[in-house]
Length: 288
Length: 288
Image (cartoon, rainbow over all chains, first blue to last red; front, side):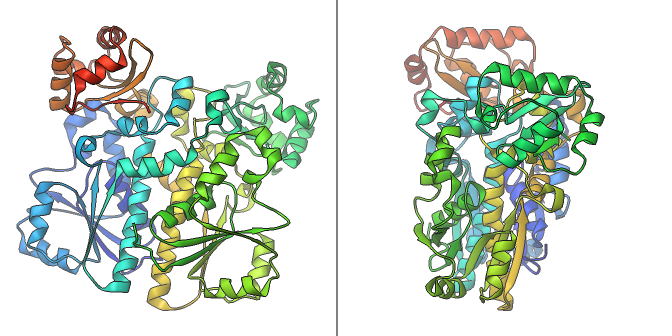
């Protein structure tokens, strides 16, 4: 997409959310430059962190793949000139950067932080703990979720807020500094999905209560995501897999229904399943 | 936030991702109106879907709380006038809406869809199946994740793309139609977190391999999220909880270390833990 062609963004952030925001904005066409201090590179690129999690370096490569990367000293006058020319700079909200930009004239500054005061050092898992919906996860599993999903959400929200700042600047032509925090983001987004009903029925359609929306395995242990919620998909699904189930059975929580579907899939290979589906739309997808 | 004050958005979408985008844009200050057909209301508001998942109605209320809601017929001339005046309209990408806007003159149209062709009927779970990282989830749990996280990601990305369209329009003053899909969004965002290393070590820091970043329980069964990854947090954490552990132990995967921490928390109540933490920053958060 080239929606943001011509927009110059300087990204001074590191690790996950800030770089993810730059990655999203770059995908939309912005010209994003990641600026790293020579003295203090992005921890995700450093070898000692690879010992903690070898994925971090892959994440670093992928999130920053379409950006220019500059390693420099922060007292470089050329850098100062670029800051003043850029449409937007994204910086961590900390004393160093606050002092540093005092002497510069950036148009739009987006500051990112975990949160204010006692929330200034939230990691992903701490942020999820601030959302009541996280109890749904804990009912199933007492390990952290498979991806740092608070950070994914925060990265997207930094990107959205960045563009909102640019729109405001286009309107007013006045320099603008805005802060966006992980804490406020997860409270905004994850808390929008709370429901009193979870107290009585923590398992619902979306998290696997029903046979029509669930995960199954083929004979050769390939995972299949079934989401045949609508009548037409369920009907066709039962037809092509020769399953003797009624329309109502798709919402029937009794183990017997699940077992019929499980048994069917366990009796055929992934290849055979693909041949049965052909190009029919039944909302059944193999996991990549 | 008032960054988007004065921006008029008409949202013709239903269910989760489109309304979430409107919710995010409204939080940033935009004036969002949700337009529902009198004949075909948002399924999340309908009583028959409450039987499938009682949370849907809460989600409907929460995602649309700060919007004006209009129920009308789509051949209403007043509606047509509003469409032409609005800064942006968000519509589902389908034949009905494509035909309908042909006779109108909207400035910016954002169309949302699950995907093109065989991907036109993806549900959340099908979309997650298209991302290789979903295998990490399946190693732990063969139920869908606790929230429709593909839809959460898509909702945020619709919001970001909407603002990118508005910036483009401000620059060119030319009418603009853009499509954003669930499939492309999850491929963009979730696939940025793939890593070859997951094949050999599917458990890493972020998903619970290490004692310093994990979930524990107090004596009275309250969940605690610990993320004391940095030396200073781990040091203080061990100090205040009187845990005889070394700096290296925070990255030590042996069961013995986990067990020491588990036993400590299992011996004290949530209240006692809160008193021990006081206002110290140790990246330890009770789940809400």
